[in-house]
Image 1: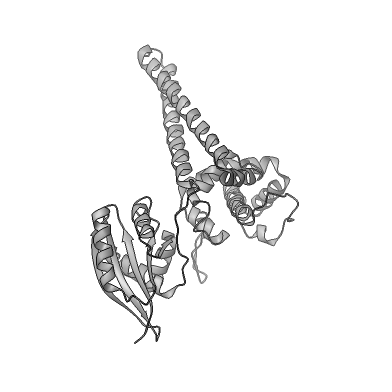
Image 2: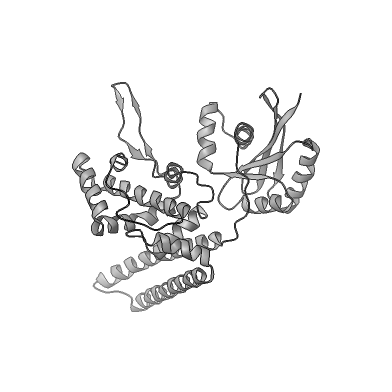
Length: 344
Protein backbone atom coordinates (compact mmCIF):
# COMPACT_ATOMS: atom_id res chain seq x y z
CA UNK A 1 0.00 0.00 0.00
CA UNK A 2 1.25 3.45 -0.87
CA UNK A 3 2.63 5.54 1.98
CA UNK A 4 1.56 9.19 2.05
CA UNK A 5 3.47 10.47 5.05
CA UNK A 6 6.15 9.50 7.56
CA UNK A 7 6.44 11.06 11.02
CA UNK A 8 8.78 10.63 13.95
CA UNK A 9 7.14 11.75 17.20
CA UNK A 10 9.62 12.77 19.89
CA UNK A 11 8.93 13.20 23.60
CA UNK A 12 11.85 15.25 24.95
CA UNK A 13 13.13 14.93 28.51
CA UNK A 14 16.26 16.26 30.16
CA UNK A 15 18.32 13.13 29.59
CA UNK A 16 16.51 11.12 26.93
CA UNK A 17 14.50 11.24 23.74
CA UNK A 18 11.59 8.80 23.55
CA UNK A 19 10.56 8.38 19.90
CA UNK A 20 7.79 6.72 17.90
CA UNK A 21 7.96 6.24 14.13
CA UNK A 22 4.70 6.02 12.17
CA UNK A 23 3.34 6.00 8.63
CA UNK A 24 0.13 7.28 7.03
CA UNK A 25 -1.18 4.97 4.33
CA UNK A 26 -3.10 5.73 1.15
CA UNK A 27 -6.42 4.68 2.72
CA UNK A 28 -5.72 7.22 5.54
CA UNK A 29 -5.05 4.48 8.07
CA UNK A 30 -1.85 4.80 10.08
CA UNK A 31 0.53 2.48 11.86
CA UNK A 32 3.01 3.24 14.65
CA UNK A 33 5.68 0.75 13.68
CA UNK A 34 8.79 1.46 15.77
CA UNK A 35 9.62 2.82 19.23
CA UNK A 36 13.02 3.56 20.76
CA UNK A 37 14.74 5.66 23.41
CA UNK A 38 17.97 7.63 22.85
CA UNK A 39 20.16 9.80 25.04
CA UNK A 40 19.50 13.53 24.79
CA UNK A 41 23.09 14.36 23.84
CA UNK A 42 25.30 14.40 20.76
CA UNK A 43 25.98 10.66 20.71
CA UNK A 44 22.28 9.94 21.09
CA UNK A 45 21.43 12.31 18.24
CA UNK A 46 23.79 10.45 15.92
CA UNK A 47 22.43 7.05 16.93
CA UNK A 48 18.85 8.25 16.45
CA UNK A 49 19.56 9.59 12.96
CA UNK A 50 21.30 6.35 11.97
CA UNK A 51 18.33 4.31 13.26
CA UNK A 52 15.81 6.63 11.61
CA UNK A 53 17.38 6.27 8.16
CA UNK A 54 16.75 2.53 8.36
CA UNK A 55 13.04 3.10 9.10
CA UNK A 56 12.09 5.60 6.42
CA UNK A 57 11.03 5.13 2.83
CA UNK A 58 13.29 7.46 0.88
CA UNK A 59 10.78 8.66 -1.71
CA UNK A 60 8.28 9.75 1.00
CA UNK A 61 8.68 13.01 2.91
CA UNK A 62 9.72 12.61 6.57
CA UNK A 63 8.66 15.03 9.30
CA UNK A 64 9.92 15.03 12.89
CA UNK A 65 7.44 16.45 15.41
CA UNK A 66 8.21 17.38 19.02
CA UNK A 67 7.07 19.68 21.80
CA UNK A 68 8.76 22.92 22.81
CA UNK A 69 9.84 21.62 26.23
CA UNK A 70 11.76 24.41 27.90
CA UNK A 71 15.38 24.31 26.74
CA UNK A 72 15.90 20.56 26.46
CA UNK A 73 14.70 20.29 22.86
CA UNK A 74 16.90 23.05 21.47
CA UNK A 75 20.15 21.15 20.79
CA UNK A 76 18.29 18.30 19.14
CA UNK A 77 16.31 20.74 17.00
CA UNK A 78 19.51 22.42 15.82
CA UNK A 79 21.02 19.01 15.07
CA UNK A 80 18.07 17.93 12.91
CA UNK A 81 18.02 21.25 11.06
CA UNK A 82 21.75 20.99 10.39
CA UNK A 83 21.26 17.52 8.92
CA UNK A 84 18.43 18.59 6.64
CA UNK A 85 15.64 16.76 8.48
CA UNK A 86 12.21 18.42 8.34
CA UNK A 87 11.12 19.43 11.82
CA UNK A 88 7.97 20.80 13.46
CA UNK A 89 7.97 22.16 17.01
CA UNK A 90 4.53 22.28 18.65
CA UNK A 91 3.37 24.13 21.75
CA UNK A 92 2.91 21.71 24.69
CA UNK A 93 -0.74 22.64 25.31
CA UNK A 94 -1.60 21.53 21.77
CA UNK A 95 -0.37 18.02 22.46
CA UNK A 96 -2.04 17.93 25.88
CA UNK A 97 -5.38 18.91 24.38
CA UNK A 98 -4.94 16.40 21.57
CA UNK A 99 -4.17 13.58 24.01
CA UNK A 100 -7.45 14.23 25.80
CA UNK A 101 -9.29 13.46 22.57
CA UNK A 102 -7.52 10.10 22.38
CA UNK A 103 -8.71 9.21 25.88
CA UNK A 104 -5.25 8.06 26.90
CA UNK A 105 -5.58 6.65 30.42
CA UNK A 106 -1.91 5.93 31.07
CA UNK A 107 0.42 8.89 30.50
CA UNK A 108 4.06 7.92 30.06
CA UNK A 109 6.90 9.20 27.90
CA UNK A 110 6.11 6.48 25.37
CA UNK A 111 2.37 7.22 25.16
CA UNK A 112 3.24 10.90 24.74
CA UNK A 113 5.60 10.05 21.88
CA UNK A 114 2.84 7.93 20.31
CA UNK A 115 0.38 10.83 20.59
CA UNK A 116 2.86 13.29 19.09
CA UNK A 117 3.49 10.92 16.18
CA UNK A 118 -0.22 10.43 15.57
CA UNK A 119 -0.76 14.20 15.81
CA UNK A 120 1.87 14.73 13.12
CA UNK A 121 0.32 12.09 10.86
CA UNK A 122 -3.14 13.66 11.10
CA UNK A 123 -2.21 17.32 10.79
CA UNK A 124 -0.58 19.54 8.22
CA UNK A 125 2.20 21.26 10.14
CA UNK A 126 4.65 24.06 9.41
CA UNK A 127 8.35 23.30 9.13
CA UNK A 128 10.55 24.86 11.82
CA UNK A 129 13.72 26.80 11.16
CA UNK A 130 16.02 28.38 13.77
CA UNK A 131 15.53 32.04 14.54
CA UNK A 132 18.54 34.31 14.12
CA UNK A 133 16.96 37.41 15.67
CA UNK A 134 18.16 36.83 19.23
CA UNK A 135 14.85 36.23 20.98
CA UNK A 136 16.51 33.54 23.12
CA UNK A 137 19.13 36.09 24.16
CA UNK A 138 16.45 38.58 25.20
CA UNK A 139 14.49 35.91 27.07
CA UNK A 140 17.57 35.00 29.12
CA UNK A 141 18.16 38.65 30.02
CA UNK A 142 14.56 39.36 31.04
CA UNK A 143 14.34 36.19 33.13
CA UNK A 144 17.65 37.03 34.81
CA UNK A 145 16.33 40.47 35.66
CA UNK A 146 13.14 38.95 37.02
CA UNK A 147 15.19 36.77 39.39
CA UNK A 148 17.26 39.77 40.47
CA UNK A 149 14.14 41.81 41.22
CA UNK A 150 12.65 38.94 43.25
CA UNK A 151 15.87 38.55 45.23
CA UNK A 152 16.05 42.30 45.85
CA UNK A 153 12.52 42.30 47.27
CA UNK A 154 13.62 39.66 49.81
CA UNK A 155 16.68 41.75 50.74
CA UNK A 156 14.61 44.90 51.16
CA UNK A 157 12.19 43.06 53.44
CA UNK A 158 15.11 41.80 55.55
CA UNK A 159 16.55 45.31 55.78
CA UNK A 160 13.19 46.66 56.91
CA UNK A 161 12.88 43.90 59.53
CA UNK A 162 16.36 44.65 60.93
CA UNK A 163 15.78 48.38 61.07
CA UNK A 164 12.49 47.84 62.90
CA UNK A 165 14.19 45.97 65.75
CA UNK A 166 15.04 47.75 69.00
CA UNK A 167 18.58 46.31 68.78
CA UNK A 168 20.10 44.88 65.60
CA UNK A 169 23.46 43.78 64.22
CA UNK A 170 24.94 46.68 62.24
CA UNK A 171 27.34 44.45 60.29
CA UNK A 172 24.45 42.25 59.14
CA UNK A 173 22.59 45.33 57.98
CA UNK A 174 25.70 46.57 56.15
CA UNK A 175 25.99 43.27 54.28
CA UNK A 176 22.32 43.42 53.30
CA UNK A 177 22.75 46.96 52.01
CA UNK A 178 25.82 45.85 50.05
CA UNK A 179 23.85 43.00 48.46
CA UNK A 180 21.02 45.35 47.55
CA UNK A 181 23.50 47.75 45.93
CA UNK A 182 25.06 44.87 44.00
CA UNK A 183 21.65 43.71 42.72
CA UNK A 184 20.78 47.26 41.65
CA UNK A 185 24.02 47.41 39.68
CA UNK A 186 23.29 44.08 37.99
CA UNK A 187 19.81 45.24 37.00
CA UNK A 188 21.27 48.39 35.43
CA UNK A 189 23.76 46.27 33.48
CA UNK A 190 20.98 44.03 32.14
CA UNK A 191 18.86 47.01 31.05
CA UNK A 192 21.89 48.53 29.30
CA UNK A 193 22.59 45.20 27.57
CA UNK A 194 18.98 44.99 26.35
CA UNK A 195 19.04 48.57 25.05
CA UNK A 196 22.36 47.98 23.27
CA UNK A 197 20.98 44.87 21.59
CA UNK A 198 17.83 46.66 20.41
CA UNK A 199 19.97 49.40 18.88
CA UNK A 200 22.16 46.86 17.08
CA UNK A 201 19.25 44.73 15.81
CA UNK A 202 16.93 46.98 13.83
CA UNK A 203 14.18 44.41 13.14
CA UNK A 204 13.68 43.53 16.80
CA UNK A 205 14.14 47.16 17.82
CA UNK A 206 11.37 48.19 15.42
CA UNK A 207 9.06 45.53 16.85
CA UNK A 208 9.70 46.82 20.37
CA UNK A 209 8.95 50.38 19.26
CA UNK A 210 5.63 49.27 17.76
CA UNK A 211 4.65 47.46 20.94
CA UNK A 212 5.59 50.47 23.06
CA UNK A 213 2.84 52.47 21.33
CA UNK A 214 0.32 50.38 23.30
CA UNK A 215 -0.82 52.17 26.49
CA UNK A 216 1.11 50.83 29.49
CA UNK A 217 3.61 48.76 27.50
CA UNK A 218 7.22 49.81 28.01
CA UNK A 219 10.49 48.52 26.65
CA UNK A 220 10.98 45.76 29.25
CA UNK A 221 7.41 44.51 28.79
CA UNK A 222 7.76 44.48 25.00
CA UNK A 223 11.10 42.65 25.17
CA UNK A 224 9.65 40.09 27.60
CA UNK A 225 6.69 39.39 25.30
CA UNK A 226 8.90 38.94 22.23
CA UNK A 227 11.41 36.82 24.14
CA UNK A 228 8.87 34.50 25.73
CA UNK A 229 6.98 33.97 22.46
CA UNK A 230 10.13 33.86 20.28
CA UNK A 231 8.66 36.70 18.25
CA UNK A 232 5.30 34.85 18.05
CA UNK A 233 7.01 32.19 15.92
CA UNK A 234 4.71 29.32 16.94
CA UNK A 235 1.63 31.44 17.60
CA UNK A 236 -1.08 31.29 14.94
CA UNK A 237 -3.96 33.19 16.56
CA UNK A 238 -4.90 35.47 19.44
CA UNK A 239 -6.75 32.62 21.11
CA UNK A 240 -3.66 30.43 20.98
CA UNK A 241 -1.56 33.23 22.47
CA UNK A 242 -3.98 33.64 25.39
CA UNK A 243 -3.84 29.88 25.99
CA UNK A 244 -0.03 29.88 25.84
CA UNK A 245 0.06 32.61 28.50
CA UNK A 246 -2.49 30.83 30.69
CA UNK A 247 -5.00 33.67 30.28
CA UNK A 248 -7.60 31.47 28.61
CA UNK A 249 -10.88 31.00 30.47
CA UNK A 250 -11.85 27.67 32.01
CA UNK A 251 -15.48 26.99 32.81
CA UNK A 252 -17.21 23.81 33.98
CA UNK A 253 -20.95 23.62 33.40
CA UNK A 254 -23.33 20.67 33.07
CA UNK A 255 -27.11 20.91 33.18
CA UNK A 256 -28.51 22.94 36.06
CA UNK A 257 -26.64 21.34 38.94
CA UNK A 258 -23.01 21.91 37.94
CA UNK A 259 -21.89 25.43 37.22
CA UNK A 260 -18.37 26.39 38.22
CA UNK A 261 -17.04 29.91 38.23
CA UNK A 262 -15.12 30.86 35.08
CA UNK A 263 -11.42 31.21 35.86
CA UNK A 264 -8.25 31.69 33.87
CA UNK A 265 -6.36 28.42 33.50
CA UNK A 266 -2.92 29.73 34.59
CA UNK A 267 -1.55 26.73 32.70
CA UNK A 268 0.86 28.63 30.56
CA UNK A 269 3.84 30.95 30.53
CA UNK A 270 3.90 32.73 33.92
CA UNK A 271 6.42 35.30 32.69
CA UNK A 272 3.89 36.55 30.14
CA UNK A 273 1.12 36.81 32.74
CA UNK A 274 3.42 38.65 35.12
CA UNK A 275 4.62 41.01 32.38
CA UNK A 276 1.03 42.07 31.53
CA UNK A 277 -0.06 42.94 35.11
CA UNK A 278 1.33 46.49 35.45
CA UNK A 279 0.66 47.48 31.80
CA UNK A 280 -3.01 46.59 32.31
CA UNK A 281 -3.25 48.75 35.44
CA UNK A 282 -1.55 51.64 33.63
CA UNK A 283 -3.87 51.32 30.62
CA UNK A 284 -6.90 51.34 32.91
CA UNK A 285 -5.74 54.57 34.56
CA UNK A 286 -4.57 56.51 31.52
CA UNK A 287 -6.41 55.21 28.43
CA UNK A 288 -10.11 56.07 28.25
CA UNK A 289 -10.98 53.04 26.15
CA UNK A 290 -9.64 50.58 28.70
CA UNK A 291 -10.93 52.64 31.59
CA UNK A 292 -14.46 52.38 30.16
CA UNK A 293 -14.03 48.68 29.49
CA UNK A 294 -12.82 48.08 33.05
CA UNK A 295 -15.75 50.04 34.51
CA UNK A 296 -18.25 48.14 32.39
CA UNK A 297 -16.87 44.74 33.39
CA UNK A 298 -16.73 45.60 37.10
CA UNK A 299 -20.30 46.87 37.02
CA UNK A 300 -21.36 43.54 35.53
CA UNK A 301 -19.78 41.14 38.02
CA UNK A 302 -18.24 43.38 40.70
CA UNK A 303 -14.77 41.73 40.63
CA UNK A 304 -11.97 44.20 39.87
CA UNK A 305 -9.24 41.60 39.43
CA UNK A 306 -11.35 39.68 36.91
CA UNK A 307 -11.80 42.88 34.90
CA UNK A 308 -8.06 43.65 35.14
CA UNK A 309 -7.23 40.16 33.81
CA UNK A 310 -9.55 40.81 30.85
CA UNK A 311 -7.52 43.94 30.10
CA UNK A 312 -4.29 41.93 30.38
CA UNK A 313 -5.55 39.46 27.82
CA UNK A 314 -6.74 42.24 25.51
CA UNK A 315 -3.36 44.00 25.62
CA UNK A 316 -1.44 40.76 25.05
CA UNK A 317 -3.59 39.90 22.03
CA UNK A 318 -3.02 43.43 20.75
CA UNK A 319 0.77 42.92 20.81
CA UNK A 320 0.31 39.89 18.54
CA UNK A 321 -1.84 41.89 16.11
CA UNK A 322 0.66 44.77 15.90
CA UNK A 323 3.63 42.48 15.24
CA UNK A 324 1.82 40.33 12.66
CA UNK A 325 0.36 43.36 10.83
CA UNK A 326 3.54 45.41 11.16
CA UNK A 327 1.63 48.43 12.46
CA UNK A 328 1.32 50.66 15.54
CA UNK A 329 -1.42 51.19 18.09
CA UNK A 330 -4.28 53.51 17.09
CA UNK A 331 -6.71 54.33 19.91
CA UNK A 332 -9.38 55.33 17.39
CA UNK A 333 -9.13 52.22 15.22
CA UNK A 334 -11.93 50.24 16.89
CA UNK A 335 -14.81 51.46 19.07
CA UNK A 336 -15.89 49.58 22.15
CA UNK A 337 -17.73 46.62 20.70
CA UNK A 338 -19.15 43.16 21.28
CA UNK A 339 -15.73 41.53 21.07
CA UNK A 340 -14.57 43.43 24.12
CA UNK A 341 -17.69 42.60 26.10
CA UNK A 342 -16.96 38.90 25.66
CA UNK A 343 -13.57 39.18 27.38
CA UNK A 344 -14.99 39.01 30.88
